[in-house]
Image (cartoon, rainbow, N blue to C red; front, side, top):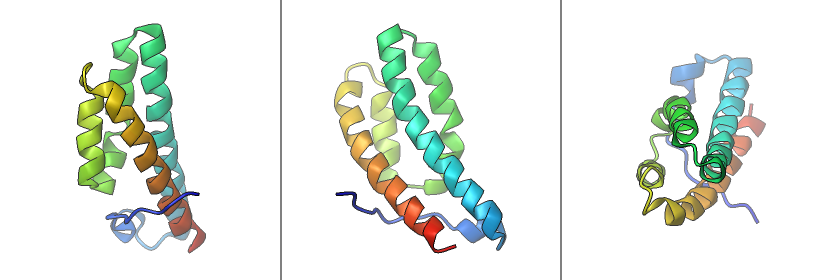
Length: 109
């Protein structure tokens, strides 16, 4: 069962009362969060840290908008080779919760 997480995003700040843009923004945020997880595992399997570095860079705007302190701390741990393996499981759970909340927000549009 998916659980929701409190979102700290002020969508009106970014979407300026444009429901279509808000929906696109939400879709982009979900895509970024899902892509980061995929890139993490792809980077490990290919032993390509540059790939993961690009993914972290790409998700920065989404992370900034979400302003979720726990998520940001987990992301920092994912960058550490020692802490990354443990952090990814926490990231997966947070991603599910955040994406669920984003989808719920989109449903209200």
